[in-house]
Length: 269
Length: 269
DNA sequence: AACTATCATTTCACTATTTGAAACATCTAG
DNA sequence: CTAGATGTTTCAAATAGTGAAATGATAGTT
View 1: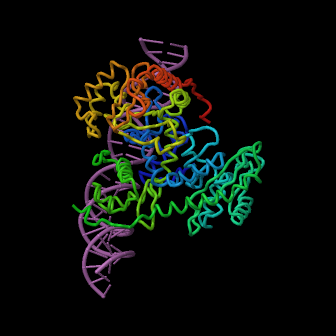
View 2: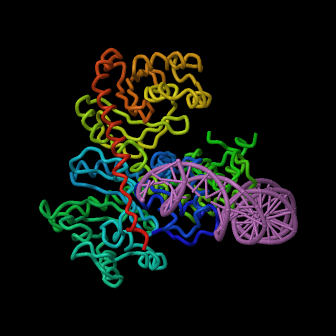
View 3: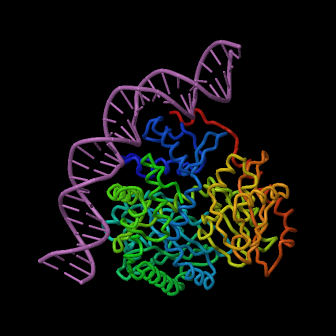
């Protein structure tokens, strides 16, 4: 998944090990890692020790297995607060959720994948991390396509190459060509649909979040099921979603450039 | 906050830089970091580049400033799922929340600090990362004291030394001695109170989550305000909370040791 | 209890990466 | 145009990381 061999620097290497551990999604033993890792056992072992002593990994003695450590959760809290659209978008999502009453997602692009950074659920009250932090494919989700559509060509090219084009359902777009056509439609329409492309019975409408200069910041979506509603009905939400997306973009842009006051004397001491 | 100078290995160093960036809680420029970092500018610069190219930091060109990257959010999702009590505890917290109707926290110890890994709010429906991932002091919170009380002496000693003993309110325990007395009371009582020790008007009752062998896994708490309720009233929740804590511990222990089936042949080929 | 297979851990000479002081480049404001 | 501050690059020296192979540790088998 993650660039496996391109790990010249030590830090790169460490992070790739971290990813490798993450990819198991369960506690993993040294020998299991050896089999999938390009590094020899000794090297891996030392790396795991380092990461463990740093709290990036936890170690279960009885199982002799490593998992990602909770220090990451702490860091991620700051990352989420600092670098995601979620805190900015929160009041806007709340309002949208109250008004629409369906499941709402807020997503950003991370490494050619869709990263969900917030969610409002139709029924259930809380979902927490189980949703925020989740990743999904870009080529077959509403938010993914909405973002891809407005990516500059150079970046888009790269991202398109990294998609799997696995056919989750009969409606999944299975090639770069099909996807490019779809993206062009999305560009003219201004927003994207998911026509049961990722999961059967699940449809959604997704609106990109664009800066004034049309750079992609993220996307929001409203999801429902074919049994409850139709794409036509979802489409009626477009204006409201567009407004929300604009509001998020504007707030985020203002937020990111607070007064450029430098306190020169203050820090010198 | 984090061990600043102890960073011999390259990975250690990189992570300490990451922490340093996190500690600013806003985008930070190279020169700002230079002033607080033990490393020379050139070294720092290269480190930041590496972390940036790895997606652990994001860089805002217009501000020339670094923030924690969203790759961390992705990793943390896995960490939270794998290594925290949250997924296991979820149904139990849901039930508790429904029954009690007050704010409920689930916390674990991380590096002498309280790390909140889940939350159920009395009023508001969703809080997400904004709460999970947050850290707080151990010596003056209910969950913190509940966990400290059942720590083995050796670990406890270390943790106690790392507390600030800052007096947030007139009720805050301001020294190791006072805290040790309190912990001894908690041990005999079986659970902890927060008597407005962290925030005026905020009280709570906290129950440790212990393994069968009495090792501390985490703690749960029910929080309220002095205007709405009293410690005596909260105390009546103790049995229910005790039951919940036990349930979490048991589920977690069973969960961690699934059938130790090794598929020897499966992986070799 | 000895034997064996499977991992985890350590060793050590070799090497590639990291270091950091100082030079250089770029930007901003006066 | 110059001054002051910050960001970026350089290069020899130092250090930290490498990995094949030996050594421990552990669980299972006869």
